[in-house]
Length: 213
Image (cartoon, rainbow, N blue to C red; front, side, top):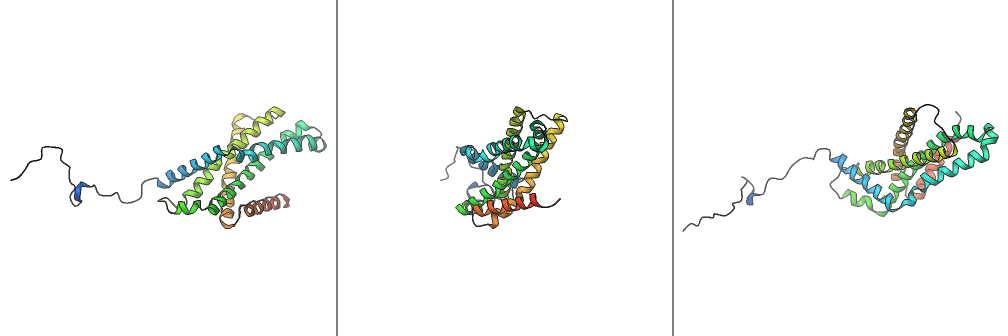
């Protein structure tokens, strides 16, 4: 005797027992971009949970401006106000360079703690952790430039051209720091200790400042 099933029937796929659809083969489109963005979000979450990581891009440039303007400004240019117009863009570039240095230090810390061993076990692109780390630190560059501009305007700094040119200069500084941060990423992957990354990067920055033009 044959019984008829009047309930819901499961559609069966030929060649697959139990009606299980065949697995998707091949990489998903834009997988590297999605993975890099997800890891960049991880970097931002770490920064939000540890706001003291932003001290080097907020408080440190402010101290530099105060020291150089009010201790050396009158002796160098004769006027602290005139020297502020010249000094603030230079401090801006210096700040984003130092912020890029932190990229290598944080990357080396993740490697030492074994976080990258976990990343290697995930089905993601091998370059995604590096790209995500650099993209996540772009927010540090934006915060440093914004805080420096706000403090500079309080002291009397004024843009001499137009807002569009000032925005283009800020974007150029961010792109420069983004490109330079890849050199710090290389150093962070080669050094054994985070302190070694910071010491080597500081030595290279000091050598570049002391090199003849």
